[in-house]
Length: 193
Image (tube, rainbow, N blue to C red; front, top):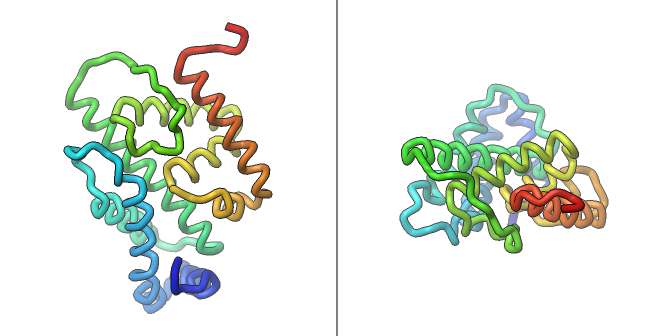
């Protein structure tokens, strides 16, 4: 986060995790600004009539995280990894709710050639990606987590490596393999077909 050393953020996160309200007060503007930046990055290419806006996504993620009683925050990367999961849940829940309201339509095929740009996807495609990601998590949790952190959380390769305590090359390899697996899964292709 520009202007805020990672060590200071980590110190404040840990203090907040122990219940220090003053640490939360100091942390809020810094963390919230970063959440908004990440939410904006995600939402900037959404369709214009999308009901969930950047501020709403950042607010909802922040509220869910602040309302957790006591958390043992390891560091800044750990916080944003959890935030990525929260944003994924919020977006998928919103898409599922809209889908239930519309009732209808069958599963859609999704072209994942542009997988890093999830923000251009429509609700059914987001749900399909989430369903495929859940299936991948059952087969290879680490690769699913790499996709979640990069795809839904907007984390860079370096940040993802930091969160998962992996080498950056491992993250890149997992990213490539998981993308191929997701493309096959979502297109209905099976190996050898």
